[in-house]
Image 1 (tube, rainbow, N blue to C red):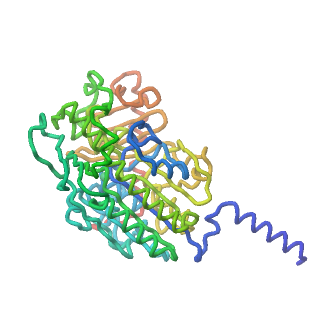
Image 2: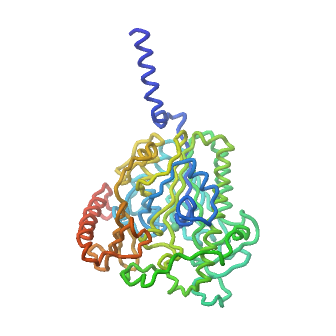
Length: 487
Ligand SMILES: [Ca+2]
């Protein structure tokens, strides 16, 4: 072979290698993964999405540096099943995984969870606080593991915190008419303007431990997962985080006359302003408390991202930031999660890949997509037929898309509900036979979901289309490689 031919081959090979950096991943320079998940963080509290009041400078900076997904959705708007689906790579109905568990008993012992797969491929995997399900505040107060999947981690740490019993000014704004009861509670909307600094609480400790691990393991490929528990209730944060949000200045979502009249009973969320007997002042206090909790969490996020920069690891670390589901802050007088309405199922998502141009993206993404996305970015094969789709095409090309709709489900009080959401429509069906009703919203003209069109004869054809599509989607999801344990 002539010298020029060899040179030609080398140049050609070099150009190929430069096309997409993960192609160059080798055993020596595997990218790190820093996986950060906040608990119950809704897009409506973030200025990169719809919010104009809540301050999250560190999330904003990360969003500006990475790929910001404007249309990312969870698979199940409750902590446990959402995280189980995301980390196992299977839809809730694939494994019948609807409980507050890791999902391990549903997918079986032979399947590899996402962090476990990184561990088996030479990564140092570490968990700090809530990644799989933990009871908040129960497991946080006790410093216990929750329903963790121990096979995933080389090392793990829990971040104990005082939660609703933190010293400071506390107030319960749910089921406390007129604020007459001088009490607090755990898994309810208790607000605590806490004494002391960030490190009194779980998320402050989570940031501190995560930073310690980043420094300690900087010389090996790591997959470090940090789980913040705010803004999940109780809304507890050091007092200073409440200062930008005087509750009198909070604005409630529009109250629409007769809003509930076209929502089937199964679609009325389990916590409402009515059944929780919340006055308008208490609703405003709940929003202010949520924002304070978000700002506190954001400050802890900032500490971790700064440490990554200071250690010179930004150029070789993939950063993911997301939440397990959204949260209602008074839309339709709904509070918290479980519902399949937009604010409850939509999640913030940023993926920052070193060397990749930042972008804002409107393509649909699901949390289940993180499994194949991260394995592809790290140059790992897939261990099994996971059901998500890699988002790498979207990260590379702002105009690409990998799915034309999202599929999310929920279960509450024996009603199984389903959401199909595409660019035009949100279709929610209660039970597989629709026995508990249907909601249909035109998301172009009615993004607040105030006008249920399911009962309107003009849209019978649209309803029939989605009914059929749901049957197809469910059978597709159920057709998977999980061998049921009882079989
Ligand atoms: Ca959650």
